[in-house]
Length: 576
Image (cartoon, rainbow, N blue to C red; front, side):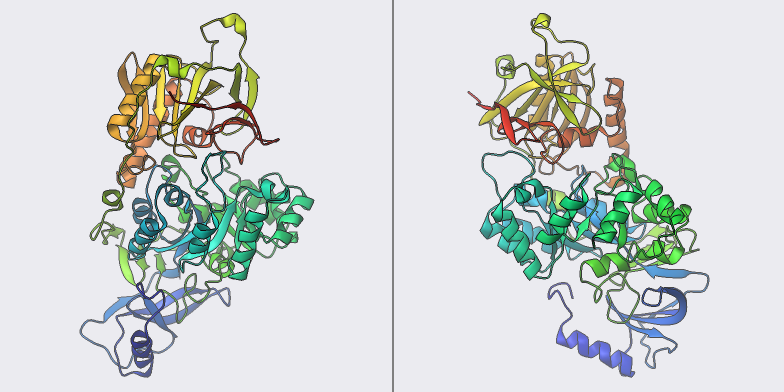
């Protein structure tokens, strides 16, 4: 199936021959108790598999067995469809391949992925080549097509030719996420036309509507939005359902709302979860210690959601939303053989996992090497920065700074002239510099990590370089270390490396296995907290400093921007 996107005629004929009893299946799961997602009930059946496809589910056993047919006794197990993460940002310090391996071992074998980093950093041909390679893995990878850069940039990579190529790619299954919805409401017909074309291709659109009113939600529904993941309360989730949205309930380090929302929905006797599913929304590594979709299901069960609903919210509901009921999300004839073997419906962490008909986990032991045929980290280079910075380059020409209210919300503040050349407590210098060395914007940051001497990082919405700190010399030293390591996050103190997290894959992603990355990211987070960081997730704080989908003020390539009025308050300058 992999190369053709659907099974070939020869494969289809062979599958029919297995059903008729003239060919042998690859694998037979005998006496399986499984979740029938069409009846929403637990049934008993034998399941025949040919390579990556389920051929038969029912009472019969095959008439023909070959020496190579694997017989799997399912006594004592409960089988559920492989879990699907519907909203993956696959470059949150990890990269798609390392995350897929980690997720598959806990039963998440389907992923709907953000194309943002590939779109921004690679040509379309390069990106599609990597997508094709990832499609060869046992995980079922699908992709979004973004419409906007999420920041105020000089040269947007989003143009009609590129959007058309992505929308028409067979593994791209949705448009969005639509962070640029205010532009559409205000009259941006280019994005609206791309939304319209997405709908004509019968692909859904993911919106991004935090705090939206009923009127705004309705207007975006008219424009084509199908799903929203920004409900923060049960009231907001139910309002979206009433308006005909699919609701993706979020559980992340910056919005851990899922338990409260589900508890309230159960309390209010919401009886249909058909248009509800769950997401980690691009959780950073440390937050993934407890699992991926298996952790979301466990939360749902703990809040009193019925087991059938909990498991279907992580499988069949996602498949239905993306018009892929014929491929994934079900244990039924014709579907890809993504199946999780549970010891109990009370424990969503599988004992064994089949993905595209291959064992990736067997009796708790990983048995498939996701890196046996290629390593994505070898395909993608790090950053090459061929310019240097001096203290004069970091001189701010404004008294306006960014005040961190929480992890991701920043408001403007004015730094008082009475401090002269020094800085008030808890105020840091802040710089965003073009990774190609063409422009720079300097300001101030309050409320991030008041004891931070020097920091440089390439993990930002635009991929440009953030410098933060009390000491311009240590900021420059951190920048030099970033250049040397070709991307990452670096803390310097008195000219020495105090902490670092190398990101040599496009400057965004680590080449470490997930288990090692979780520990390394945790250590770096602890180091930032020692420097005074005191809110939720520092990686999201860094990522969103330049992102215009959050209020109220941001540092962007064009300069310091008033988000609510889309006004450049302080323009960036050429780097001379």
